Image 1 (cartoon, rainbow, N blue to C red):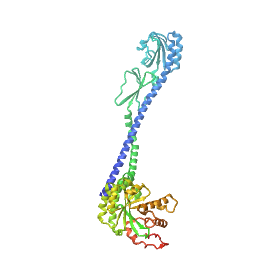
Image 2: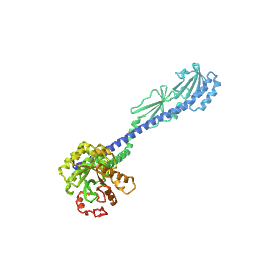
Image 3: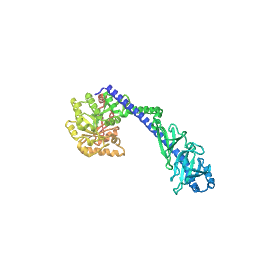
Length: 532
């Protein structure tokens, strides 16, 4: 068995590793989540900028279609007759610089200059065209060299007749908002392969500096797109990550501390049990069993108690189920057997005095209990018979019946503890062939009441008598309960009426201090509460 010091060091080392790993994991996950969230937010901001820019330009260009639909009816009319109507449209639209009428490829009327006679191809080489066009160009008439957006609307007959609208693109780029730093450092309007960058004018091509990325979004209504240039969303998120570190560190330390507290009671409870065994923190108590007729002590049930110096006394209802979950119930049973052998001299050396030890059903697998008895119990050559008490809350049908028969051959009795509270089945009563049924204290407490358990008590007694199985009643606390059980044929009683569980070293003094058997009253023995 490992020493207590080694177990303590191992427990603390594993506990620290678990807590540190949890803290580091939380730190990494927190920073990762914050990085991903910040990156996604940056991407959404860039996309939002492009969407707003496109929406702004679309809102400006949409009325041009309405204007062109009205103005195309003027193509072919004398300039003097069409001029007023054209100037009214320009006046209503602040972004519209001018409207011109083209007939047979010749610009013959302008809303600014009036009558003209200039081939439109001299002003815009790509015009006239049979299809509608949107072009980026420079002004060669009014504000020479300034960027303009040309919207061409041909007549439906496919001839070289149409309307050309000139849009004040500098005002347009101002309306679509300036770049939003740090997410967008440059914004470029792309129309038919020509580019207009905010603050820089027309560009032959768009270059992206090292460390920057571009995002292009096209309009679904008009033939243009917006190119936004700036740092990548990941780079911006990574640059901003140090600001998230203090919060992530605090959260990771909090999780590490919570894990430290949790492992003290849950994750490392198996180490607590191992530590308790190595440090001999467990102590074996015993509770006497008395003959209901003559009040003589006929045996004891050995009970395990745990005085944990880190948490105080821990109830068996807490550590026994946890020990079963951690597959540590067998080591606890071996501890009880070892203590029982070491203190055999404290018990009466009589074949009529038995020693009861609680055993889990899992201890029967592969005959493990027999091996432990041969190692701990049988070498002591104890005179007192041994009784193994199986709790009915265990999976009794899973008990190996061959092991039970082998125990009977070795002279070991079998009792079913807490009978009536678990997996009751007449079938396994027959296959296990128990020597004793121990009536659970909840049924004993119901004696003399109208509770359903009171009726169940009578049924259990009748069942045991019919099967020829001895009975022990647990939890006897009143003389009335003792008398009722005695009158109904329950010969062995156990409970606070006679004695509470006590350390093994106190049992001889309790046994010596007991009063002689009580006198009979009306033919029945009267129970007496012991001195201790």
